[in-house]
Every structure is written in C-alpha cells, then in structure tokens.
Image (cartoon, rainbow, N blue to C red):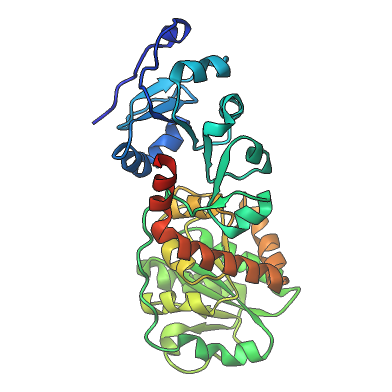
Length: 352
C-alpha cells in the first residue's frame, strides 16, 4: 500500500505542530528509500516513521512522506520535531539538517570522516571504520540475510597444487555473462605479460559454454577444460582453466587469489552471495544493481572498476599486493559475521 504525502509544500511556511509527532524521520532520495524498503518497513513496525525526500522523483513506498524544502534546515527541524533524524544518504541538505540537531542525527553506513561531527555514525565494516577514523560498527541493516552457500564436498582446490607450487597466481572470472569473456582474456593477457598466472573462466550460462570455448582458440592460450580433467591435478603450464559445470564453478571460489565477479561488467545476474561467502578479494565493475553488490560497495569490501578500461590495472595491482588481498579477505569475513544480526542491532539502537 502506498503511503500519502503528509502535507503540501506550501504548508512548510505556516506555523503549526509536527505532522507526525514523536517520529523518526528518515532522510533519503526516492531511489534510496525504495532500495531500503524492507528496512523502513521493519522500522515502521516498531515506531512512527516519516520519510523526508531529498528529490522530486515519485515515491511509492509504505512510509508517510514529505518533500524537503531547498532551504531552511533549522526551520525544518523545528517543524518536524524529530525524535531522531536517520540519514540514508550523505547529501548537503542532510548535513544541514544534522548540523541543526547533531544530538538526534544518525548516519546509516556513514562513509566520510566529516560525519563524525554531525551525529552518530553507523558503519558497515571494519574497513569502513578504519578509513573514516571512527563510527559504530553495526553491519549493514539495509541488506537482507545472505543465503547460505553449500561448501564443496571434495577438496577441489588440491588440483591446483602444481600451479601454486610454481608461484603462480589464480585469477577467477566467475559466472561471466555475455560480453565479459573477451574482457577476461584481454585483462589476463595484459597481466600475464608482467607476471605468471592462471585464468579460471566460468561462464554462467551452460548454453554458451561450447561457443565461448571455440571462440577462445584465437587467443592461443593453453586451455584445460574442466570436464576433461575432472579430478586430476591441473598441469602447471595451463594458462586457462575452463569451467563447465555448476559444482566446479562454486568450488572454484575457494581456490582463487582474486575473483572478478561476473555480471558486474556487462550486466546480468550476479552470484554475489557465493563470491562473498568465499571471503576472497573481489573486483566488481560498474553494473551494481544487485543489492549485495551495492552493499559490498557501501562497506568498501570490494575493489571497484568504474569502467572496463580499469579492469586489468585493478587486477594487476591486487595480484601484486598480498597485504591488500589479505585485508579485503579479513574485512569480508568480519562483515559476514556481523550481518546476521545487523538489522536487529540498528533497529534496537534507533528505537531505544
């Protein structure tokens, strides 16, 4: 059911009592409010909640709402008389509101050290806490519970013993979508020109497997097909390990030094839950519609590429920096530990 606007714009200038007494007011754009719908419904189930929208885009969610005027942060706070201001976005007008009553402002997934002077700052990960120099570690309340990923039943990674003994890295392009395989080969060729490694490639759609393999011949890379080497050790001279079934695609997450998440460069479905569950360093592209991808970016758990051109450089940098890879992996593990109770913790803190 769509909630109604609490009062028209011109009534901001009339004296009067709060349109929603003793409420928590959530400050966000319409898009951010839509993405946080589950969280807002859970918050609304505990206490009166109003939504203060920062833009003019349509809103069709369940929370009563107002459009925020362009000016007059102090007047807005006096009119609303908020029990708390809950900021879902870092925006100049949100900052002005917080500055008017920092003792009532709470920033969800705060990502800037400047916010520490503008109220309580809830951060989603240890990396985020370190990078902004403070905050309260809560996990991300906007994320739904992450589904459990079945652990591999065999020691799949043992087959890469000879590769690892030779001191070579393993770069995994996982669950790639159409258009991403040429990116994988192109990035691999650039990186391998500087140091030796193996590319593990796993297209997500089985219907595309044979065609992609045939197309890959033009790259002149020694390729081992996973279905032809089901259990034996991968030869150390292999340049590409081509994965063709779902169990092997899943197991491969645990073997990689670095994972490029398929679907984030050319769009399509993203297997982000499996990628995070492996707690390996991850690289993602500019397509971030998937909720878990957005959450990982908010928490700074992943290395990001703003364009396809950034891919080879980002991978080369991480493959050459074992400490950075370990830091990412450690932060993901900590984030996964926090997430099961993150929403409950934040709801408790906001409604105490």
